[in-house]
Length: 307
Image 1: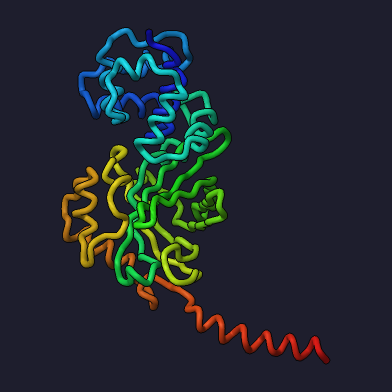
Image 2: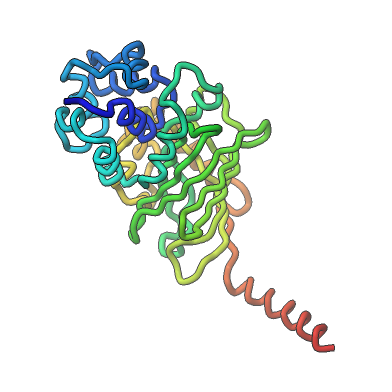
């Protein structure tokens, strides 16, 4: 017997970054153009007033969340088992996903304009900070979803040392889109991006933080470009974050489901954006330069303190 359909649909919406019922229905149509999941029925299902009667809806749901489970399991499992399966398969933090699902009454018919336009999954391209991958581009995954009062974001990279993920709020002003994302261990990344414009096919700006893989931490800042994907991608989650040397961003996007009309043109513009500026799009502070500065002013401070 189907149970907790409303709760499991909210968790699905949080996973996919869908905001409206229309968005969620569109996600179902991508896996089955003839799906019986529609906006009107979804309204009742999300309110817990009814459950899907057609078994095909659950089969479509199973394809959408890609858990390797049958539609019958999707229908009959409890919401916590569903959450555990989502997080294990898609490497998401259960508390974050639960918070996103609990932050609202599920996908609604109307939201703030920025909520509707920004929510989704983005493939993010920037300069690698690790000295072991110098000169390479790195791909991250950004998910923007609606929370109770504002948008929330998760940024992740699949690194050789494991999956790194930080979460936090999204702040939109007239001059910038800002994200302050952290994990429970204290890792933190700051993003300052251009204000988004419809249809929000790309976000871009600066990412600031410290190196993760290397002999020591270096304060770093890089240009970053975030391309919106039509749907969640297992490849984005599972493949190595570091792109091959001289790798094509347009080719990588094609593997993620973004069909670029002019790949060569897209690569040229992406390179021009990421590598622009005097530092080639990347700035890092060397530890020895910092140590030299410390020595000068530490001695000055200690001498003054002793006198």
